[in-house]
Length: 246
Image (cartoon, rainbow, N blue to C red; front, side, top):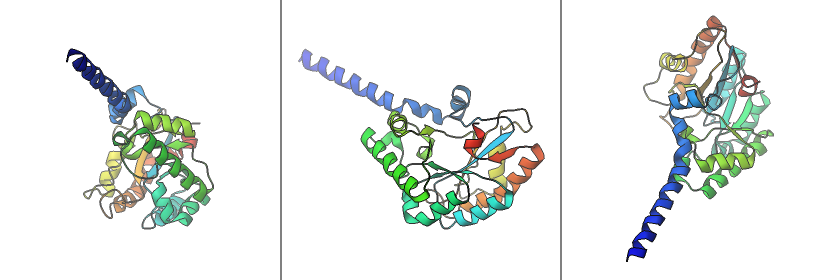
């Protein structure tokens, strides 16, 4: 009986350690931890530059109009695409790339990696990578996990595929039903040093409501011209993560 009890305790300890190792990278979802200890993962880049990123697309309800607005503003952005959304409209994904925007990977499905095993996570990233690369003609080099939650499986899978994880410095909370252009701008710029001479942030918005409130992307559209006014008044250059990390 004692031998069995010791074996059970050992097995339980091993399981606990495995769960801890799997979930430990998720601590970076905490903004203060991420910004203080992992500034590059937070998207802190070169002085005077803001990286503009979009998750969850491409979406025919929002992405075509977004491409037009970005063109009007004279901005290029980084699109973290979902493979499942690309499969719904491969032509639109190709259009984003043809417009000169940076293509990155958000996975195939939008599922939290903490609740998926290593094989499932690797399979999801490989499927998403192949889907996005084939549709856009661009090989992604950057990866952002769903919900911004990293796991050891996600980190290992990204390394195997050749992807660099990047989260964000500020997000607009544009996925909520209550969001407006003004609230999104406030969230994006809160805590951002508002003058030249400081390392620049990475901003997160969404060009799809596939994982959020229906029509929530309208708040993103309301925020973009306001963001343009803010960037111009404070002297920020807006562009892609590739430019941001030069």
